[in-house]
Image (cartoon, rainbow, N blue to C red; front, top):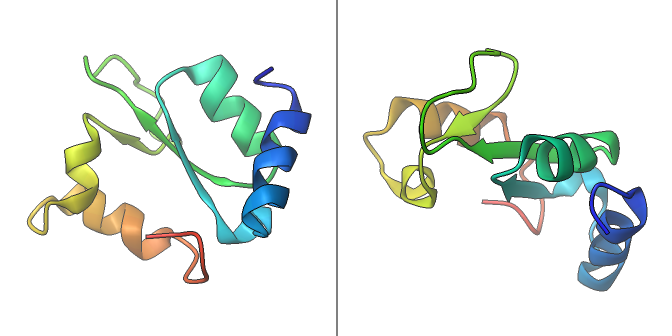
Length: 88
């Protein structure tokens, strides 16, 4: 179970993708964000209520943010993301 690294490694193995080639989007800081981060994935946290104050945490308010061309924050996240298979 998350945040155990095994679950992330299992998913990466099934996708035939290296951690550096993947993006993980989740909505729980401990189980999603920190777990995936420990495994070397690029991680984006869905912060629906805007409660996360740590600027080192990459956040969006909804999944829609990733796909809106005029969203400056999402555009920055996409630019930081790896460019291999399995990513945006």
